[in-house]
Every structure is written in C-alpha cells, then in structure tokens.
Length: 249
Ligand SMILES: C[S@@+](CC[C@H](N)C(=O)[O-])C[C@H]1O[C@@H](n2cnc3c(N)ncnc32)[C@H](O)[C@@H]1O
Image (tube, rainbow, N blue to C red):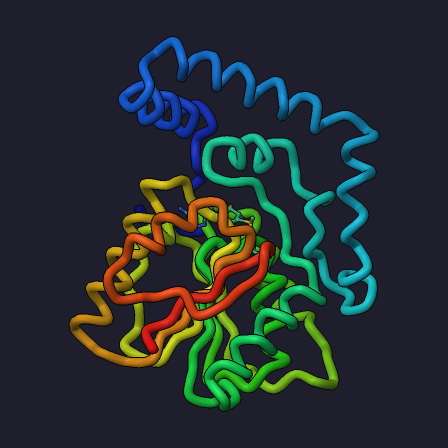
C-alpha cells in the first residue's frame, strides 16, 4: 500500500480489515469481543485525565521546539492507532542507551550505516538518530498526519550535537518497505501486528541473502520477539527487558 499525501486511511475500512484478520484466526465471536474491548479502551483513553497523562513525555519537545508528544494526536489518528498501532514516541534516554550499547557491540561509530525506523510516527527517533553520525536516516510512517508532522519536525529541529543532516520521512506501509542494500540499523518500536512483523523480517532476510552486509535490529518493547528469534539469519546479540538487539555477526 502506498499512502500518497492526499489519501486518507478510512477508519471503517481499517476496522473491517482488522476484524476480518482476527476473525479468520480466532472466529467472529472472539474478534467482535476484542473489537468492543479495543473501542472501550479507546474511549477510556480519551478522558481528560488520560490525555493529561500523555503530556508526561513533553520535555523533549520543549527542549527542541518540536511536536513529537503522543498527547497532541487527534482522535481520528488515535482511533486508527487501535487498528494498526498507537503512536507513542521513544523516550530519549533509552534511545541513546540503545545506540550506545549497539555501538559498543560493533566497536565503531555509525558512519557506514543508515538508520531506518519502520513506523516512525512524528519522527522523534529520526531527530534523535541525527545526533549520531549515520550516513542517512529514513523513517516510514503509515498515517499521513503523523508523517506531515515528522516533516515539520525535521525542518525545525535544532541541536548543537546534530551530526547527520540527511533525514527523511516517507508516508507508506512499512510492511512493504524495500531495504536499501547498505549497512543498516533497523529500529522497531512495536509498529506492527504479528503478520506485519513477519513480512518485514522475511523481506529483510531476503535482502540479506541478495546483498550480504552488516545489519542490526533494535527492537524496543519486544512483545513479538519470537518472530525475530525464529529467523535464520539474524541472531540475538544483546538487550535488556526494555529492548532486544539482533545482528548477523
Ligand atoms: C509505537 S509508535 C513508534 C513511533 C516511533 N518509531 C518512535 O519510536 O518514536 C508506532 C508507529 O507505527 C505506525 N505504524 C503502524 N503500522 C504501520 C505500517 N504498516 N506502516 C508504517 N507505519 C505504521 C503507527 O502509526 C505509529 O506511528
């Protein structure tokens, strides 16, 4: 699916597709119950108290004069998030900790690597990654509104420690992403349901067979880690309870 600037994802179609996929795996009764539960959660999450809680992550935005908080996401995008995955930005300290740990593992900085975030939302990881010397940085986001904000954020971002100035956000379905044949750090913060993650890891492994090279995966909040663990080329090389690191060496 290529999501052009002008196209809008339909909430009804997204909900129908979500229900159909679930009903095919678990039966219509279970799918309907889970849909009702997801919508109830969405309604609870829309109360003023819950909205206030989401402003807890706003320090990064104050510091860099950008808009990456999950609090300022409109109801329509939050509802679409129920059927894809909800937008939530990665916390700054943890992000730099993950990159430091990977850098220690590869015993080099990131000059030779590109950084790719599949499901990049408003682009906070793209900005944070630009403080490291990546060759270039690419984010792929499904929702056009979040992608548009990522573009604004990339334009506005100012940091004295910025080292990479080739930063782009693409609006597309990241499960169909064609990996560039370059050494890559792939970042995932739970953007897909299991079928989508399987497709991405299969694409990545096929790309590695076609073009052998150094590739590392940083998987934040690795709820579906078994999908990576079942792969035949990528192996676990480290991590904590908050993230896992996979690589080919
Ligand atoms: C948990 S957020 C992570 C945001 C960002 N990576 C970060 O760490 O700050 C997951 C994002 O994945 C996006 N997403 C879900 N399904 C997607 C798909 N098929 N293609 C591209 N983006 C997707 C959601 O819209 C959401 O913005």
